[in-house]
Length: 220
Image 1 (tube, one colour):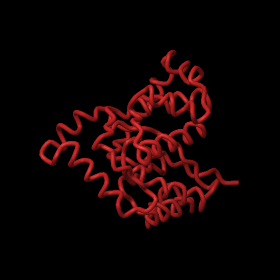
Image 2 (cartoon, rainbow, N blue to C red; image 1 turned 180 degrees about the horizontal axis):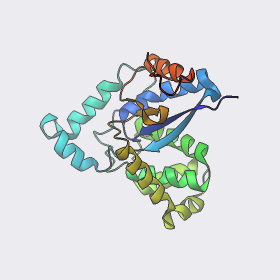
Image 3 (cartoon, rainbow, N blue to C red; image 1 turned 135 degrees about the vertical axis):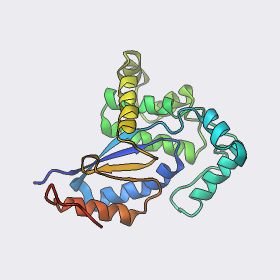
């Protein structure tokens, strides 16, 4: 049996394009099954939201302009529901707390539990307008999800969770990841990022699954 194609998948949990891409990720898993292995990583796009808004959106309406951008971006995607309060009233200060919790879950439980929790947190933010930048909110949500706060906290207290998160952030910089979401394939030689259509992603993966010779360039 051939080994699965490794796809390193980088996102920021507050990124609307990663929320939109969730349907594409689900479809890839359905269509390709064990032919691919997604490895989830987090990157720093919304680590300091107030500064991001102050600098990048100062001349474009601040939080109000950013909220309009997020809502208009998702408007044409039926599966990417967005609550009206997102960024107008509910304004997380950082994505780092959520990323930290998710790395803690990965270490305390396993990768699948962390992946499931990430989708849950994204849903709670984008659909239910929960402030997932707040640690108290995060711990309440993971408790509702059936996870033990003390078990999760153990990897935060001993520093292993923050070390794993910093590893993700550093790897994203080392690989020159430019945006969320990003799909890194073929040992880093092929990177797709941003609002990439499903067929484009699938075609690139199918080309790599043909196992071309090491010196043969893939094309699509």
